[in-house]
Image 1: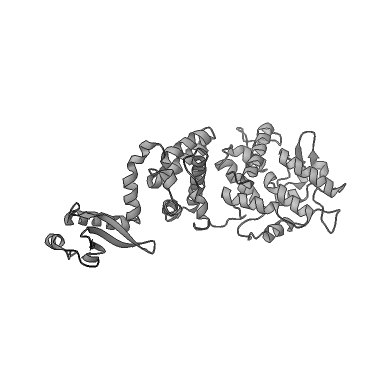
Image 2: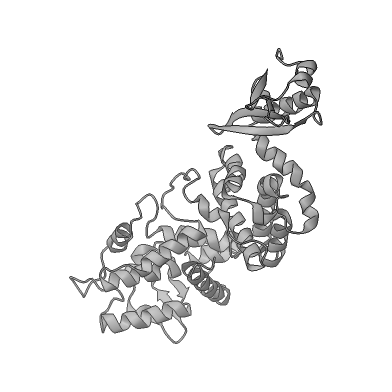
Length: 399
């Protein structure tokens, strides 16, 4: 590239009654202010926006030195990096020693909340932090990280086509920010400002909302549903149970064992034609008490409003979700299973075999034989209780 400026021209430039620019080429220029200060600037486009990078003041930064900085900034742009962001990140490398950087607090959060969970979950979470978030925002003081800066870090992941990882990184970052808020080292969680900013993941067979913050809003919306009482209660209880919609809607009172706090589903109602047991958390028992007062002596827990001797229809809960404003590509009754499957593993850290067993999926033991319905029942009961508490926390905005 042929440069327009010379060292002599830069040195001899004098102030005028208005600030003016002396261009060197490719967006690099010298801004001469009315007070005689000479500032190096680089105008460029990033993410379809015009931006300006400050490169120092002459003569502290010479023409030769600023051209080297300009060349480095162009190299960063060619790699999809924002030079302004990279410059700020470089300046903050000494923040690690202060103890309030994102990385320091994230590692503390990991030790307190994640390290004791399943090995696979802990390894996956730490890998996500070290590979995707620490290199970009790790050295920043956590209280000074803005939503656009967090979005920049996550979009780097998104640009590689790994949408699931991008959404998971947003969720993990949010948990770190909320941990920092609780310990007085941050005032807000910028991840909550990124709602709708990421590309949507490809909708799979059963749509589900996996972001904990959004799920909390779903649960609050469910609380406000004003349709038929049986449909409303089936909708409220479905996230706690995460069983197949057909099994929930056709739940019978003679299947509810209040002595042992279990829902004992007979084989003929199950997809795999094997009996299944669902431990009932205290929240579910409370809702069932309310529903029993509403449904009286009906055979089904959730009787149809038009045909009380039959359960609510196949589409009753689905249509209730639609009325709450969630499209079929966002959430379905079956999606509560996907939500539980994902968050029990990735957030609460439960063993995959326990989760799969509670979903009534086929799980084999070490000899290859299918577990019977009572296998790990105590552990599953504890898991279901913790899941119910977690949903309550989300609904109350304590995620």
